[in-house]
Length: 406
Image 1 (cartoon, rainbow, N blue to C red):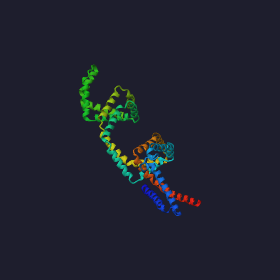
Image 2 (cartoon, rainbow, N blue to C red):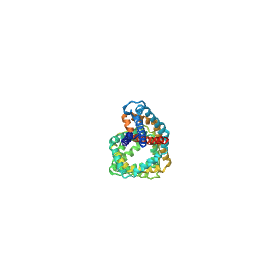
Image 3 (cartoon, helix red, strand yellow):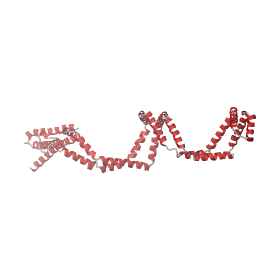
């Protein structure tokens, strides 16, 4: 467009020059003088405007006439003036912040997020993102790290505060009574077996043979061992054990209650048992060191990642819906965003001018002039056309006035 306008300006100037020359043979006539004056004024106006437009960018006809090639000579001053205008007038910090304050950035972000979440491509995009994330996660390495962290945490954990709580739980749930009943049941099951009955009889007779008692008690003891055999003694002991265990299973049995009281007192004071904590810590350390949980942790991580893919979309939609309904949180988000933007503007505002200067400094004189002529050259060339036309009309008017005065 600038080239076309320049071409038209040249034609207008040529027309004025040709018109002036063509009127020279007729300058003695009235119409000849009138048109000659018009073409002459148009030629002068066109040449003057050509000179003015050309002098903005370069020396006319390459002649270094003073006060021409204004842009190249004053490039630094023009650049600085442009930067000052941008920074202090057009794009000053206050105007930028005022314009940003008038925009609800959080509203636009929510609107954009809703649009994206509702789009048909979102599920595919989300799956692609999750796939790329999973591919970049070393699950084996993460599992090994988590396993070691869990072990270190449990190693550091002090088990002493938990022992009284465990003791209280045992008593409240009556695990002590359950344990006693289980023990009595096992003792009865063991004692009722025939081979164990015979074994008990033999043990008892053997112990009695080793007892050394004098007098009537010794005579009675030897008489008893003389006629009693292992089976009979074992049966007596068996019946005694079964009777005792049966009585101890009754909830109201006084001996049972005494045993449970003693057992519960021992449980409540178990934390004070000498060496107990060391033994528990030793068992804990062995169990932890023997635990191989990396494979199980890897499986859990994979399952969590798979579940996360399914729930991410609904989670984001739910989160966005709650944010949209909660005007207070939305206002806090808006304020947070704008404050961050204001801080960024405050910190980087001077970079606007620096960026403009940096980009302008990259251009040599000819490139900059060519760019400006390409952007505003059309209007400048039309100044030349208008100068020729206005000069022509003014020339006609002046010569008309002159003729009227004559």
